[in-house]
Image (cartoon, rainbow, N blue to C red; front, side):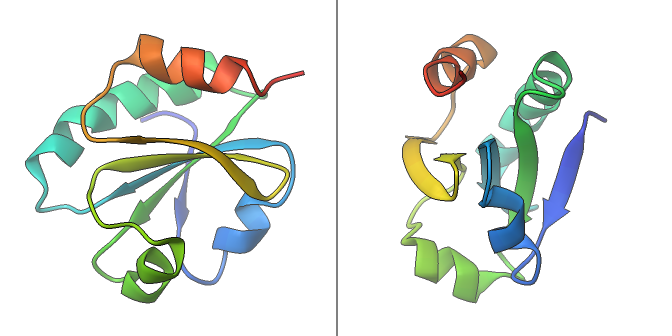
Length: 106
């Protein structure tokens, strides 16, 4: 397990409000979500101290998922200082995630 914060409707906004954050929106019943989980785990290790990494389970947090306008999972959102600056929907690689995030790191 990497350096990942389990997010919910209570702690979500505080988690993404400053710096660069990656949020994996998933569901435990979702096959592609299970495939991407080890990629996100490794990403959290590689970017420890530079990018906050969190996971939001879509099933018990439906109101937050709807508020974010998420229609497909897995969806990875990239935040910078509280604003969504990029996203990835569906399967991805660690390299693509790294490229996506690097441009927002100072």
